[in-house]
Image 1 (cartoon, rainbow, N blue to C red):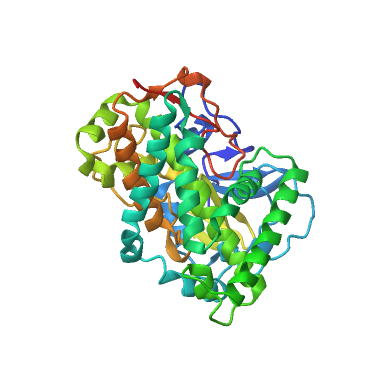
Image 2: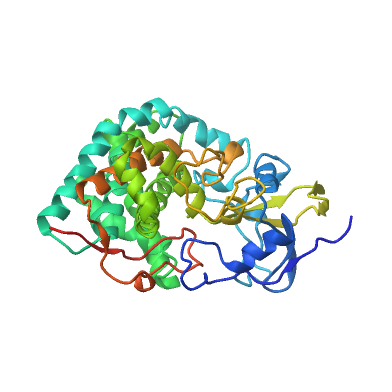
Length: 402
Protein backbone atom coordinates (compact mmCIF):
# COMPACT_ATOMS: atom_id res chain seq x y z
CA UNK A 1 0.00 0.00 0.00
CA UNK A 2 1.14 3.56 -0.63
CA UNK A 3 2.03 5.95 2.09
CA UNK A 4 -0.72 8.29 3.32
CA UNK A 5 -0.51 11.84 2.03
CA UNK A 6 0.11 13.37 5.43
CA UNK A 7 2.18 12.75 8.54
CA UNK A 8 1.47 14.30 11.93
CA UNK A 9 4.45 14.38 14.26
CA UNK A 10 2.88 15.92 17.38
CA UNK A 11 -0.68 16.41 18.50
CA UNK A 12 -1.50 20.10 18.84
CA UNK A 13 -2.02 21.32 22.40
CA UNK A 14 -3.77 24.62 21.68
CA UNK A 15 -6.71 25.90 19.68
CA UNK A 16 -6.62 28.94 17.45
CA UNK A 17 -7.16 32.27 19.25
CA UNK A 18 -10.79 33.29 18.87
CA UNK A 19 -11.84 29.75 17.88
CA UNK A 20 -12.52 27.97 21.19
CA UNK A 21 -15.09 25.59 19.67
CA UNK A 22 -13.07 24.41 16.67
CA UNK A 23 -10.52 21.58 16.80
CA UNK A 24 -6.88 22.69 16.57
CA UNK A 25 -6.15 23.82 13.02
CA UNK A 26 -3.43 21.16 12.59
CA UNK A 27 -6.06 18.44 13.00
CA UNK A 28 -8.41 20.14 10.56
CA UNK A 29 -5.54 20.40 8.09
CA UNK A 30 -4.74 16.72 8.57
CA UNK A 31 -8.35 15.86 7.71
CA UNK A 32 -8.09 18.05 4.60
CA UNK A 33 -5.17 15.88 3.45
CA UNK A 34 -7.21 12.72 3.94
CA UNK A 35 -9.12 10.73 6.57
CA UNK A 36 -6.03 8.91 7.88
CA UNK A 37 -2.50 10.10 8.58
CA UNK A 38 0.63 8.57 9.94
CA UNK A 39 1.33 9.70 13.46
CA UNK A 40 4.62 9.74 15.34
CA UNK A 41 4.11 9.12 19.04
CA UNK A 42 6.47 10.82 21.52
CA UNK A 43 9.69 8.84 21.56
CA UNK A 44 9.49 8.28 17.81
CA UNK A 45 7.13 5.29 17.81
CA UNK A 46 4.96 5.07 14.66
CA UNK A 47 1.18 4.95 14.76
CA UNK A 48 -1.89 6.31 13.02
CA UNK A 49 -4.30 9.22 13.32
CA UNK A 50 -7.85 8.91 11.97
CA UNK A 51 -9.58 12.23 11.35
CA UNK A 52 -12.36 11.15 8.95
CA UNK A 53 -15.87 10.19 10.03
CA UNK A 54 -16.32 6.96 8.04
CA UNK A 55 -12.95 5.52 9.02
CA UNK A 56 -13.37 6.42 12.70
CA UNK A 57 -16.79 4.78 12.76
CA UNK A 58 -15.48 1.66 11.06
CA UNK A 59 -12.64 1.29 13.58
CA UNK A 60 -15.08 1.62 16.48
CA UNK A 61 -17.22 -1.19 15.04
CA UNK A 62 -14.31 -3.50 14.19
CA UNK A 63 -13.34 -6.12 16.81
CA UNK A 64 -9.89 -6.33 15.25
CA UNK A 65 -9.19 -3.03 17.00
CA UNK A 66 -8.80 -3.44 20.76
CA UNK A 67 -9.70 -1.14 23.65
CA UNK A 68 -7.51 -3.03 26.13
CA UNK A 69 -5.47 -0.73 28.31
CA UNK A 70 -2.42 -3.00 28.48
CA UNK A 71 -2.04 -2.82 24.68
CA UNK A 72 -1.90 0.98 24.69
CA UNK A 73 1.81 1.30 25.26
CA UNK A 74 2.11 4.79 23.78
CA UNK A 75 0.51 8.03 24.92
CA UNK A 76 -0.45 10.66 22.30
CA UNK A 77 1.49 13.46 24.02
CA UNK A 78 3.82 11.83 26.59
CA UNK A 79 6.89 9.69 25.99
CA UNK A 80 6.16 6.57 28.05
CA UNK A 81 9.44 4.90 27.20
CA UNK A 82 9.31 1.13 27.58
CA UNK A 83 6.99 1.14 30.57
CA UNK A 84 4.75 -1.90 30.90
CA UNK A 85 1.10 -0.83 31.01
CA UNK A 86 -1.08 -2.86 33.40
CA UNK A 87 -4.56 -4.08 32.42
CA UNK A 88 -7.53 -1.94 33.39
CA UNK A 89 -8.62 -2.40 37.02
CA UNK A 90 -11.57 -4.76 37.53
CA UNK A 91 -14.84 -3.11 36.60
CA UNK A 92 -13.40 -0.30 34.45
CA UNK A 93 -14.84 -1.85 31.30
CA UNK A 94 -14.19 1.09 28.97
CA UNK A 95 -10.62 -0.21 28.58
CA UNK A 96 -11.55 -3.87 28.00
CA UNK A 97 -12.64 -6.08 25.10
CA UNK A 98 -15.23 -8.82 24.99
CA UNK A 99 -16.07 -10.93 26.89
CA UNK A 100 -14.81 -8.98 29.93
CA UNK A 101 -16.37 -5.76 28.68
CA UNK A 102 -19.78 -7.38 28.23
CA UNK A 103 -19.69 -9.02 31.64
CA UNK A 104 -19.59 -5.60 33.31
CA UNK A 105 -21.72 -3.69 30.84
CA UNK A 106 -24.62 -6.14 30.62
CA UNK A 107 -25.85 -5.71 34.23
CA UNK A 108 -25.91 -1.95 33.68
CA UNK A 109 -27.45 -1.79 30.22
CA UNK A 110 -31.01 -2.38 31.41
CA UNK A 111 -30.68 0.40 33.98
CA UNK A 112 -29.71 3.05 31.41
CA UNK A 113 -32.31 2.46 28.69
CA UNK A 114 -33.96 5.34 26.86
CA UNK A 115 -37.27 4.63 28.64
CA UNK A 116 -35.72 4.59 32.11
CA UNK A 117 -33.77 7.75 31.49
CA UNK A 118 -36.85 9.58 30.23
CA UNK A 119 -38.61 8.64 33.45
CA UNK A 120 -35.95 10.76 35.19
CA UNK A 121 -37.01 13.87 33.27
CA UNK A 122 -39.21 15.23 36.05
CA UNK A 123 -36.43 14.86 38.63
CA UNK A 124 -33.92 16.54 36.28
CA UNK A 125 -36.40 19.39 35.78
CA UNK A 126 -36.66 19.87 39.54
CA UNK A 127 -32.89 19.84 40.07
CA UNK A 128 -32.47 22.30 37.21
CA UNK A 129 -35.20 24.60 38.55
CA UNK A 130 -33.64 24.55 42.01
CA UNK A 131 -30.31 25.77 40.66
CA UNK A 132 -31.92 28.39 38.45
CA UNK A 133 -33.83 29.61 41.53
CA UNK A 134 -30.58 29.89 43.44
CA UNK A 135 -28.92 31.80 40.59
CA UNK A 136 -31.85 34.18 40.34
CA UNK A 137 -31.95 34.75 44.09
CA UNK A 138 -28.20 35.43 44.30
CA UNK A 139 -28.45 37.80 41.34
CA UNK A 140 -25.92 38.49 38.62
CA UNK A 141 -23.16 37.86 37.86
CA UNK A 142 -22.60 34.12 38.25
CA UNK A 143 -20.11 31.47 37.22
CA UNK A 144 -22.31 29.14 35.19
CA UNK A 145 -19.88 26.26 35.71
CA UNK A 146 -20.22 26.14 39.50
CA UNK A 147 -23.80 27.43 39.72
CA UNK A 148 -25.37 25.31 37.00
CA UNK A 149 -23.26 23.08 34.76
CA UNK A 150 -21.50 21.00 37.40
CA UNK A 151 -24.13 20.50 40.10
CA UNK A 152 -26.94 19.23 37.83
CA UNK A 153 -25.17 16.13 36.43
CA UNK A 154 -23.33 15.60 39.72
CA UNK A 155 -26.57 15.37 41.70
CA UNK A 156 -28.26 13.17 39.09
CA UNK A 157 -25.46 10.60 38.84
CA UNK A 158 -24.91 10.57 42.60
CA UNK A 159 -28.63 9.93 43.17
CA UNK A 160 -28.63 7.15 40.57
CA UNK A 161 -25.68 5.40 42.18
CA UNK A 162 -26.74 6.11 45.75
CA UNK A 163 -24.02 8.50 46.95
CA UNK A 164 -25.41 10.12 50.12
CA UNK A 165 -26.26 13.81 49.88
CA UNK A 166 -23.75 14.90 52.53
CA UNK A 167 -20.86 13.27 50.64
CA UNK A 168 -21.48 14.79 47.23
CA UNK A 169 -19.51 18.02 47.63
CA UNK A 170 -16.19 16.42 48.59
CA UNK A 171 -16.76 13.56 46.20
CA UNK A 172 -17.31 15.97 43.29
CA UNK A 173 -14.06 17.78 44.14
CA UNK A 174 -12.11 14.52 44.09
CA UNK A 175 -13.55 13.49 40.72
CA UNK A 176 -12.77 16.91 39.25
CA UNK A 177 -9.20 16.84 40.54
CA UNK A 178 -8.11 13.80 38.58
CA UNK A 179 -10.17 14.59 35.46
CA UNK A 180 -9.47 18.29 34.95
CA UNK A 181 -6.05 17.84 33.35
CA UNK A 182 -4.66 20.61 35.55
CA UNK A 183 -3.83 19.01 38.89
CA UNK A 184 -0.27 17.84 39.54
CA UNK A 185 0.53 14.14 39.36
CA UNK A 186 0.65 14.01 43.15
CA UNK A 187 -2.74 15.74 43.46
CA UNK A 188 -4.31 13.43 40.89
CA UNK A 189 -2.97 10.34 42.65
CA UNK A 190 -4.21 11.61 46.01
CA UNK A 191 -7.67 12.38 44.60
CA UNK A 192 -7.86 9.01 42.86
CA UNK A 193 -6.83 7.18 46.03
CA UNK A 194 -9.37 9.09 48.12
CA UNK A 195 -12.11 8.34 45.60
CA UNK A 196 -11.26 4.63 45.59
CA UNK A 197 -11.27 4.56 49.37
CA UNK A 198 -14.65 6.27 49.51
CA UNK A 199 -16.16 3.93 46.90
CA UNK A 200 -14.91 0.90 48.83
CA UNK A 201 -16.80 2.20 51.88
CA UNK A 202 -19.88 2.94 49.79
CA UNK A 203 -19.96 -0.56 48.24
CA UNK A 204 -19.68 -2.12 51.71
CA UNK A 205 -22.52 0.09 52.96
CA UNK A 206 -24.77 -0.91 50.04
CA UNK A 207 -24.09 -4.58 50.62
CA UNK A 208 -25.01 -4.20 54.28
CA UNK A 209 -28.03 -1.93 53.76
CA UNK A 210 -29.26 -1.83 50.14
CA UNK A 211 -31.27 1.20 49.06
CA UNK A 212 -33.14 2.13 45.88
CA UNK A 213 -30.21 2.86 43.57
CA UNK A 214 -28.09 1.30 40.83
CA UNK A 215 -25.15 0.36 43.08
CA UNK A 216 -27.41 -1.46 45.53
CA UNK A 217 -28.97 -3.37 42.64
CA UNK A 218 -25.52 -4.41 41.43
CA UNK A 219 -24.58 -5.86 44.81
CA UNK A 220 -27.26 -8.50 44.23
CA UNK A 221 -25.08 -10.48 41.86
CA UNK A 222 -21.69 -12.15 41.44
CA UNK A 223 -19.63 -8.96 41.12
CA UNK A 224 -16.85 -8.50 43.68
CA UNK A 225 -16.40 -5.37 45.77
CA UNK A 226 -13.38 -4.45 43.68
CA UNK A 227 -15.36 -4.82 40.46
CA UNK A 228 -18.24 -2.75 41.82
CA UNK A 229 -15.79 -0.06 42.87
CA UNK A 230 -14.30 0.13 39.39
CA UNK A 231 -17.71 0.22 37.71
CA UNK A 232 -18.90 2.95 40.06
CA UNK A 233 -15.83 5.08 39.43
CA UNK A 234 -16.29 4.80 35.66
CA UNK A 235 -19.99 5.70 35.84
CA UNK A 236 -19.46 8.62 38.18
CA UNK A 237 -16.63 10.11 36.17
CA UNK A 238 -18.38 9.67 32.82
CA UNK A 239 -21.79 10.72 34.11
CA UNK A 240 -20.50 13.90 35.70
CA UNK A 241 -17.56 15.38 33.81
CA UNK A 242 -18.71 15.02 30.21
CA UNK A 243 -22.20 16.43 30.74
CA UNK A 244 -20.96 19.25 32.98
CA UNK A 245 -18.58 20.39 30.26
CA UNK A 246 -21.25 20.06 27.56
CA UNK A 247 -23.61 22.28 29.56
CA UNK A 248 -21.01 24.98 30.14
CA UNK A 249 -19.27 24.90 26.76
CA UNK A 250 -22.63 24.50 25.01
CA UNK A 251 -23.96 27.64 26.69
CA UNK A 252 -20.78 29.49 25.70
CA UNK A 253 -21.27 28.36 22.09
CA UNK A 254 -24.90 29.50 22.09
CA UNK A 255 -23.98 32.88 23.52
CA UNK A 256 -21.42 33.28 20.73
CA UNK A 257 -24.05 32.33 18.12
CA UNK A 258 -26.91 34.71 18.92
CA UNK A 259 -29.11 33.68 15.98
CA UNK A 260 -29.01 30.04 17.09
CA UNK A 261 -29.60 31.02 20.71
CA UNK A 262 -32.61 33.11 19.69
CA UNK A 263 -34.04 30.22 17.67
CA UNK A 264 -33.82 27.84 20.63
CA UNK A 265 -35.22 30.40 23.05
CA UNK A 266 -38.14 31.07 20.71
CA UNK A 267 -38.86 27.39 20.13
CA UNK A 268 -37.90 25.07 23.01
CA UNK A 269 -39.12 22.10 20.92
CA UNK A 270 -35.83 22.53 19.04
CA UNK A 271 -34.08 21.15 22.13
CA UNK A 272 -33.65 17.62 20.78
CA UNK A 273 -31.96 18.79 17.58
CA UNK A 274 -30.04 21.48 19.42
CA UNK A 275 -28.52 18.93 21.80
CA UNK A 276 -27.44 16.65 18.95
CA UNK A 277 -25.90 19.55 17.06
CA UNK A 278 -24.04 20.83 20.11
CA UNK A 279 -22.74 17.32 20.76
CA UNK A 280 -21.44 17.13 17.19
CA UNK A 281 -20.10 20.66 17.06
CA UNK A 282 -18.25 20.58 20.40
CA UNK A 283 -17.20 16.90 20.77
CA UNK A 284 -15.92 17.43 24.31
CA UNK A 285 -14.65 13.83 24.47
CA UNK A 286 -12.10 14.63 21.80
CA UNK A 287 -10.12 11.46 21.20
CA UNK A 288 -9.94 7.76 21.94
CA UNK A 289 -7.42 5.10 20.98
CA UNK A 290 -7.51 1.56 19.67
CA UNK A 291 -4.79 -1.04 19.03
CA UNK A 292 -4.77 -3.31 15.98
CA UNK A 293 -4.85 -6.98 16.98
CA UNK A 294 -3.82 -8.05 13.47
CA UNK A 295 -2.91 -6.41 10.17
CA UNK A 296 -5.96 -4.44 9.04
CA UNK A 297 -6.52 -2.51 5.83
CA UNK A 298 -7.99 0.89 6.62
CA UNK A 299 -8.48 3.72 4.17
CA UNK A 300 -6.03 2.17 1.70
CA UNK A 301 -3.36 1.72 4.37
CA UNK A 302 -2.21 -1.37 6.20
CA UNK A 303 -2.43 -0.90 9.95
CA UNK A 304 0.15 -3.27 11.36
CA UNK A 305 -0.69 -5.63 14.22
CA UNK A 306 0.17 -3.88 17.48
CA UNK A 307 -0.05 -0.37 16.01
CA UNK A 308 -2.03 2.21 17.93
CA UNK A 309 -4.66 4.31 16.23
CA UNK A 310 -5.80 7.69 17.57
CA UNK A 311 -9.42 8.45 16.68
CA UNK A 312 -10.05 12.19 16.55
CA UNK A 313 -13.77 12.47 17.27
CA UNK A 314 -13.64 16.26 17.05
CA UNK A 315 -12.51 16.24 13.41
CA UNK A 316 -14.62 13.20 12.48
CA UNK A 317 -17.66 15.17 13.65
CA UNK A 318 -16.50 18.09 11.47
CA UNK A 319 -15.94 15.93 8.38
CA UNK A 320 -17.36 17.81 5.35
CA UNK A 321 -18.01 14.51 3.58
CA UNK A 322 -20.49 13.62 6.33
CA UNK A 323 -21.74 17.01 7.56
CA UNK A 324 -22.28 19.90 5.13
CA UNK A 325 -20.78 23.17 6.40
CA UNK A 326 -19.35 21.26 9.38
CA UNK A 327 -17.83 24.27 11.13
CA UNK A 328 -21.21 26.01 11.33
CA UNK A 329 -23.40 25.57 14.41
CA UNK A 330 -26.88 24.91 12.98
CA UNK A 331 -29.51 23.83 15.49
CA UNK A 332 -31.87 22.84 12.68
CA UNK A 333 -29.34 20.46 11.11
CA UNK A 334 -30.97 17.23 9.95
CA UNK A 335 -27.78 15.19 9.74
CA UNK A 336 -27.52 12.88 12.74
CA UNK A 337 -25.14 10.07 13.49
CA UNK A 338 -22.35 12.02 15.17
CA UNK A 339 -19.65 10.17 17.12
CA UNK A 340 -19.79 12.27 20.29
CA UNK A 341 -20.84 9.16 22.25
CA UNK A 342 -18.65 6.80 20.26
CA UNK A 343 -20.00 3.84 18.32
CA UNK A 344 -20.07 0.06 18.47
CA UNK A 345 -19.99 -2.09 21.61
CA UNK A 346 -18.29 0.69 23.59
CA UNK A 347 -20.85 3.37 22.71
CA UNK A 348 -21.46 5.53 25.79
CA UNK A 349 -23.70 3.71 28.24
CA UNK A 350 -25.04 6.95 29.73
CA UNK A 351 -25.78 8.76 26.47
CA UNK A 352 -29.55 8.84 27.06
CA UNK A 353 -29.05 10.26 30.54
CA UNK A 354 -26.82 13.01 29.15
CA UNK A 355 -29.42 13.81 26.52
CA UNK A 356 -32.19 14.12 29.11
CA UNK A 357 -30.08 16.48 31.23
CA UNK A 358 -29.18 18.71 28.28
CA UNK A 359 -32.67 18.72 26.76
CA UNK A 360 -34.00 19.98 30.08
CA UNK A 361 -31.18 22.31 31.11
CA UNK A 362 -30.51 24.41 28.00
CA UNK A 363 -34.11 25.58 27.35
CA UNK A 364 -34.74 26.09 31.07
CA UNK A 365 -31.67 28.32 31.41
CA UNK A 366 -32.50 30.42 28.35
CA UNK A 367 -36.15 30.78 29.31
CA UNK A 368 -35.39 31.80 32.90
CA UNK A 369 -32.77 34.37 31.87
CA UNK A 370 -33.82 35.89 28.52
CA UNK A 371 -31.03 38.49 28.75
CA UNK A 372 -28.27 36.01 29.65
CA UNK A 373 -24.91 37.09 28.27
CA UNK A 374 -21.19 36.79 28.95
CA UNK A 375 -19.91 38.92 31.82
CA UNK A 376 -16.39 39.05 30.35
CA UNK A 377 -15.03 39.33 26.81
CA UNK A 378 -15.21 35.97 25.03
CA UNK A 379 -11.42 35.82 24.72
CA UNK A 380 -11.14 36.02 28.53
CA UNK A 381 -13.19 32.87 29.14
CA UNK A 382 -10.79 30.35 30.69
CA UNK A 383 -10.65 27.09 28.73
CA UNK A 384 -9.56 23.68 29.86
CA UNK A 385 -6.18 22.67 28.44
CA UNK A 386 -6.24 20.61 25.26
CA UNK A 387 -4.41 17.90 27.22
CA UNK A 388 -7.49 17.29 29.39
CA UNK A 389 -9.41 14.16 28.39
CA UNK A 390 -12.63 16.18 28.30
CA UNK A 391 -12.60 19.65 26.74
CA UNK A 392 -14.54 22.54 28.24
CA UNK A 393 -14.35 25.82 30.13
CA UNK A 394 -12.90 26.25 33.61
CA UNK A 395 -15.40 28.98 34.40
CA UNK A 396 -18.07 30.85 32.47
CA UNK A 397 -18.88 34.26 33.97
CA UNK A 398 -22.39 35.31 32.89
CA UNK A 399 -24.75 38.11 33.76
CA UNK A 400 -28.33 39.14 33.01
CA UNK A 401 -30.79 41.94 33.66
CA UNK A 402 -32.08 41.28 37.16
